[in-house]
Image 1 (cartoon, rainbow, N blue to C red):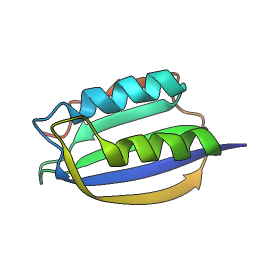
Image 2: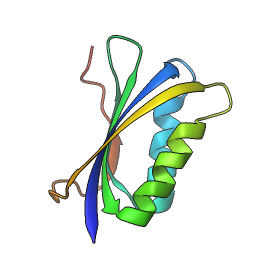
Image 3: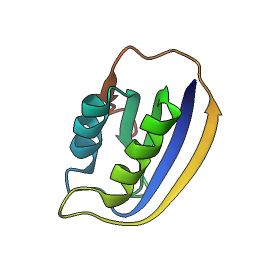
Image 4: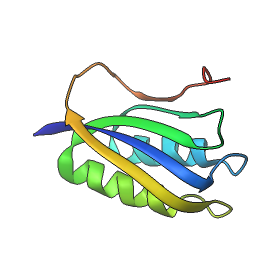
Length: 94
């Protein structure tokens, strides 16, 4: 069954390649959606896929890249919408 997850990552998650890490992990897991920096220093992720795969993705987001420090992940599960064909970095927050 397909689901959608909305994640907000807090901590040292900007300027440490977190978005590129999220993109790489999403592509490896065949998750679709996007990731972007928020103006307040957090990172937002929206992703769709199988629930067990999304759970793996969330754990990878919790770990983050080597230079990141993820203090908190806010995770909201939503209904699958099927609006994405791939996973991308969005640059539209600033």
